[in-house]
Image 1 (cartoon, rainbow, N blue to C red):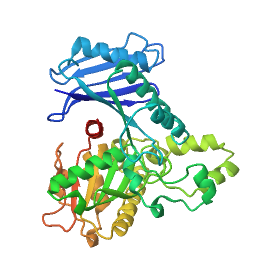
Image 2: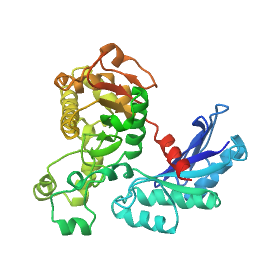
Image 3: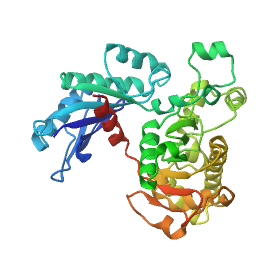
Image 4: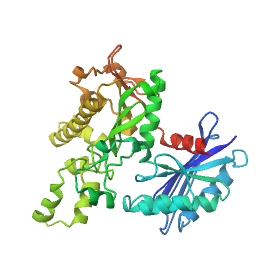
Length: 397
């Protein structure tokens, strides 16, 4: 049976999943990391047998060597590509700019575009491209498909994506809202519609992708009409290490008054802000545990975190002109019942309620957490970005 190999490539590592199309079943998964260091590391799991293996003794010079190590793991531990021939390799690519509004088969022109768009995602697109080139070398006869995080949000109107700065300058340097986590928002919105047994085209929903990175998206009829991340993934909600929304003048104030360079401020906003900046700890579980023990700093940080989410829920309900569903997803959104309850507390005027028993139920399945008969369905829907990439790759090929 044919399968899609899904690859998420970073600068010094990549994750992979082999997904069988019939039944949408994961056959294998793994991780290749510490690429370019003195000692590399690989992990591989054959989901059919449950066998897991690891190796951390050999150097992995580059992504091509990493793919060779991955192929060796498949050969030694299975499953076999002969029994599960590849229909395509699907690649997560962070930034597609305004050029890509859907999954795309990678050719020379697409490679060139991904490289050119690295100016908008310098930490991600070059690494994504390394993975694509290594995969082309490892699987020369298999279609390579790029699935862009930004593509789902290309349905935003100019009113939603335009920043009010000099128009000529913005167009020259591609400054606009792009949005991210699009693969997750697309998967979850369709899964929510399936769960509600209602055509996606008939629904107005807000999807809250709440993990270490977090974003909110207003989705009307299956189309993204507003999203919280902007030119980069820095804008919007408070996150584990990212600040989310700040007054742009904060940058100039810190440059003048604190003597910080622009590079230092950029690093601070991306890597030393959010929950980490407010509490010294970027892990929601640790911060919430500290708050439960009476730590006032942790509780104050959580209040900021929840306040920002409520702000976006209210704004997006207004943009949608009504609301059928709010959907929580990703690591924090799927697993943190207390955060869900306290975030939505007081939104009954919108028709939003929480059933405490439903909310506390731990499950890996889509489920209601709103009260029976509530005007707005509040759901928890686990995301599966790898499966969405596999679906889009298979549909295209």
